[in-house]
Image (cartoon, rainbow, N blue to C red; front, side, top):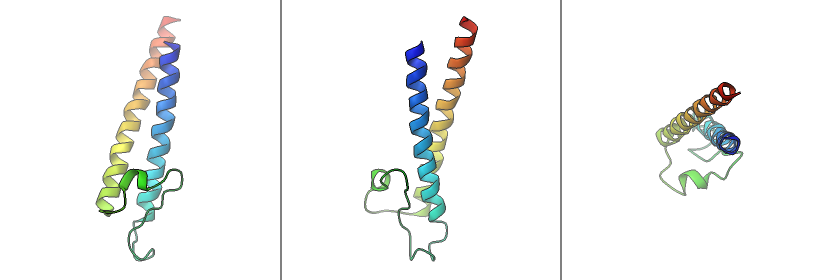
Length: 90
C-alpha cells in the first residue's frame, strides 16, 4: 500500500506540473496582439511536447489545460482516498 501511495503522489506531482505549464501557456496566449500571434509560452516543459509544430489555436490551448486539470483533480482525489484507507487501517 505504501508503494501505491508513493507512486500516486509522484503521478500527482507530474500532472500538477503539466497543468501549471499548460495554464501558463494558455494565459500567455490570451492577447495574441502582444505576441504577434499565438506562440508557445511553456516554461517548465518543452511546448512542442504537447502541441507539435502546427495547428495551434487558443481553443486547443484551453482544451489541453482543462483536460490536464481534470486529470490532476482525479489523481488528487485518488490520493485522498488512499490516505483515508491508510488512516482507517491504522
